[in-house]
Length: 328
Ligand code: NAI
Image (cartoon, rainbow, N blue to C red; front, side):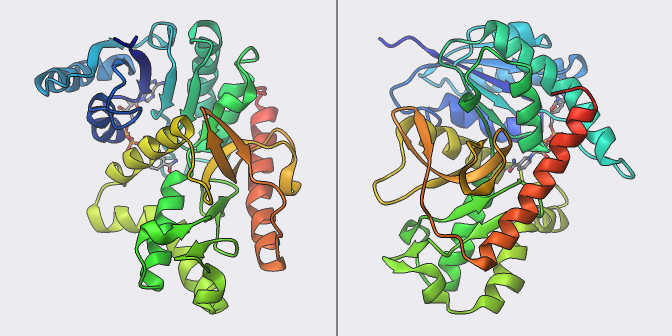
């Protein structure tokens, strides 16, 4: 029998946590033959709620679930962790400045990065979901100098999946027909969903759409503002689709992208496509055997260039703000 994989989830008692943990325990994160041990990290006042979720996990009698530990200490929750899902974060409240938001999240992600550095397994893979995801990943990474930088990733898979559905609907195709879609930049309203290299049922997507106005005024804002639209409609934020995207992100990272396709991940820039080295920005990536590569050599037209640059500028500003706080 296989050794269980340790999966740590922070913010386990939150909305995404509730949508995520059952799917991990059922085998959807890593595969139907991979046993898992869950490590739940919460703040002290939420430990009781996390225990309630653990009771429900027990009650599912998942054959792959080999244990659940709950802690409010990052050093315990990240001990031996192989997959770390950093979901819990400090949300922006009304009137909060960006600096305050980044400082509050620095107080979460710097200690968690340090705990990962000191205690995680050698093969640890980290996905940051909690917003501002790219910059929180940067903060955690800076606090974990012994962990290879490429293990820190930020989630833009929800944006990717949203874009795939919007594009498929526009062209009357199925989502499974959509390939090589890219989210560039920051997981924020400045993100750029790029269909110029995408294919739908074997045809270039931008040509098949043939409507730059739709792209600029409908598709891009619909994808970028989808989170707000869900809050408006549901009265609560997108938790199930975010959890689904986290599952997809890790599953693709571990199991690989299909031939002739790629995915979108926030990863440490190596300077590709003019994105300053070291920023955690979303790129087209292919994955194989648990590692990934940024897709090289794509031609970037003027329409795309301006939008990638705008999002990357925002990331650089967030990095500078975090640096000014002494977090980098
Ligand atoms: P939530 O507020 O329901 O849950 C967050 C949980 O994190 C709470 O239970 C809280 O106690 C916990 N938490 C706070 N500080 C913590 C710490 N230091 N250690 C451990 N746990 C801590 O929020 P929800 O809906 O689950 O969302 C979580 C995050 O995911 C938010 O930052 C949200 O903006 C972000 N998000 C990111 C998306 C993406 O595409 N990257 C998509 C959707 C949400």
